[in-house]
Amino acid sequence: MKIDIERLRAVLLATPDEGEVVQEDWIADIPMTPAAVLVPIVLREDGHTLLMTRRAAHLKDHPGQVSFPGGHVDEGDISPLHTALREAEEEVGLSSERISLLGYLPEYRTGTGFRVTPVVAQVSPPFDLRTDPFEVDEVFEVPLAFVLDPANHKQHSLFYRGAMRHFHAIPYGDYFIWGATAGMIKTLFDRLSAQGGFSQAG
Image (tube, rainbow, N blue to C red):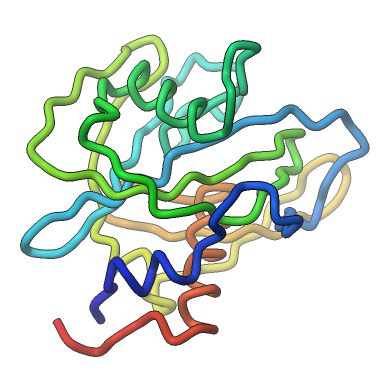
């Protein structure tokens, strides 16, 4: 399976405010904090990848989880794109000079109280990374074809806040991609699949 960047661009939203929302099935009645993440597709000659992080184990929100670079919208942020680029620079040292916007996925609302704008972008090597050890324990790349292969998409459950909750997961080697991050990847897969964004070459 090969993912063509221009086909991918075509299934994304042109702006982050087109009214579409994806939400987890256990949204709590709590205030929603605005946030944004960068979904960075690295243009590798031997196959595109997703650049991901493992969050530091001491963090209050989602400690130790695999995620995309990103975080809360700060007061000075002028757009979700600004938030995503700022966070990527702060967390892993990824320069905006290597990043080109492709588009947006629908706002993703989590059961833990975040409304996240996923900003999808291509990243052109070479680049040097510099992780912030307070925020990030590890940065790594996962083949894009792997995470978009439905054979690798799993459903898991856990008992949380008095009920059984269901969530997406994409295990990859020693990494367990789950929750909102896996949900955003699943959203991207669904849009590509619905609009014929896959080719069988490669």
